[in-house]
Length: 351
Image (tube, rainbow, N blue to C red; front, side, top):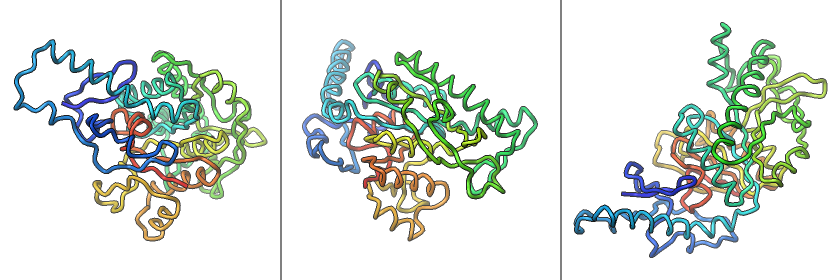
């Protein structure tokens, strides 16, 4: 039997693998082994408490199980205190997408984690895309999705649907879920308050209305964050003439993190993180610096869709963000694992 952090209440879970336990046995809490004033190191294995619950022990009565569950909740909360103290009052920017957006269970996990982090004093900013939902609505209008080098080819009709889906549907749905979970969310797009100013992508002749971030003005975000609201931002913005552009959500998250002086940028993905061997899921690189990332890129170990994510992280770090993480959004409570444990839930990149 293992245990995991979940929002509002903490409970035992017999289904989650022991390798995902957020905290080991109290005899050797991981956070005591690293300074909370420096970038935490990532151990490769988190010890399990299974030994203490061995089947070789006498049977545990139901009342004893209840007492044990309560004790574990208290111990987990106690051991999370140093991490909460470290990040309390700090801004974290989370880019939400991939499997965590498509699965209702994972979506609930991410939303509840976000609300829990807000309740204990972190200042989250939530950036989202919505690719699968856009594809669904394109199909309903008889349009075929088209991609070039991983970017959506966006003509005028597609841009209208992208804006409708991201700003009018996905954004408001996420705001509603966060509000329902107990926090106060405010939905925005890059166009609101001139938060983002777009410019055409260099390949606009082939990509159409796909843009890059030309400028960020976080003025509209600061009072929201200061009042413990959670900004939820759709990755659509306009240029100086008012023309709308579809912008990669990873790029938007990285630029916002830099402009806000965020402590941490987190990208939820459909992979474990950066792999030493792209064909070996067990070769996860738990922690790496910018120099190491550039070395891996030069050796061809980072490729495909991971390249823009890594470049986004590197750019944000170069502009003052302390750490950037690419984490496995397929893991339940991956946000809590990344922020409230030394083990993390993917790859952490440091400056």
